[in-house]
Amino acid sequence: MSRRRKNKKSAARRPYSKQNRRQNGKRVQRNVKDRLFRYLFEKDREALLDLYNALNGTAYVDASQLEIVTIESAVYVVMKNDLAYILSGTLSLYEHQSTYSPNLPVRFLIYLAQEYQMVIEKAEKSIYGGGQISLPTPQCVVFYNGTKEMPEKQTLKLSDAFENQKVRADVELTVQMLNINYGHNGRLMEECKILGEYSEFVAVTRECMLVEKDMQAALNKAVDDCIEKGILKDFLLENRAEVLGMLLEEFDAEKYERTIRGEGKEEGRKEGVAVGKREGEIKVNRLGLLLTEAGRSNDFLQSLSDRELQKKLFVEFGLEEEGEG
Image (cartoon, rainbow, N blue to C red):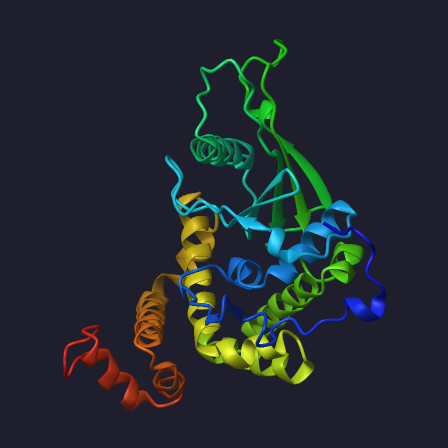
């Protein structure tokens, strides 16, 4: 595989051209329940290759060599692995996090064990055999974009969780956590254009949510602003409804995660009077997912500004009894 450095001119690419949106002549099917980060990179192999090169200082050019091995569900882990792939003997495990957790290394350990199990099964070899089984070298990375201040880079170690720190551990796993909030890790953002635009998109979304009280209105404004500024423009134009559904899902999940960790109790107290509104947002989110899966994205977009249509759709999809609300 060629590793010749691409010049700046040839490196310029249209990230969401028709060629990138299709594989083997068929339109890529998208899961609206995916996280936006995964949604961006798993469906665009060129962007994923750019991310690998930016992280490792390499210059691979053949994205077809990427083998996606993302875990859809892991034992003992509630959330699926965000993104995993093998390239040139390296197993890259990526997680996108809006909250910091010191338990990330043990989560990656569980992911890694399951990935290696799949590698061994695919090789049709026994771990009890006399020959050594070749395993891809793991690289564990967390992309952090939460609102708490975090350093540009930091290393999390599994051994930090070990009870007896006086004993030298025979097992270690390290995780590199990178701050991808807008304004951080500039070189990485320049090397991987899509990651840079994703960072900008998140920043614009948060700004809109500070101005707009209604979450749906805020997200719609964020998408409009980014399209106007050329941030993920082609992607947002084509996938607007899906993106809105994922963002609503992610913000709900983020609040839930903070609640179960015992953080944001004061926030929860203040929001107590707004339970009805929050439940309404979740219901709208669910409607968006159902309409998108039914191929009716336009109805979802129209319902965001047409309350009567929204009520009819709630009834149609069993989210609300007729006359309710």
